[in-house]
Length: 137
Image (cartoon, rainbow, N blue to C red; front, side, top):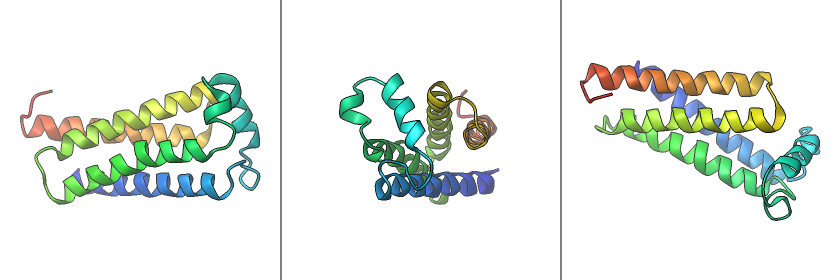
């Protein structure tokens, strides 16, 4: 189970870095079809004139929330740190919440659905590992 968690945390973290870089390289989303998504963000999110003129702020949030946290969890897993499973659980929950926000803004789509499932797998695996080691849940 821990091997799967290591793979998932690295995969999701690398995906978040890739997504953030994509948003920074093409902040209007022209090359990757994000222009309509930017308009939906502007229509549904608070402070659209501050945070949603481009995808640059979204890229930073993606990198921090779903990149950095996943890499920290992966590091803790590789170090066999006692808080590793709690970090993986937090990452799974953060990712699922991120996807719920995406569903609210853009609706269901294959990539968001897949990432929600990955977050759910992370969270369930962490709970199983925490219970296995009897660290209360």
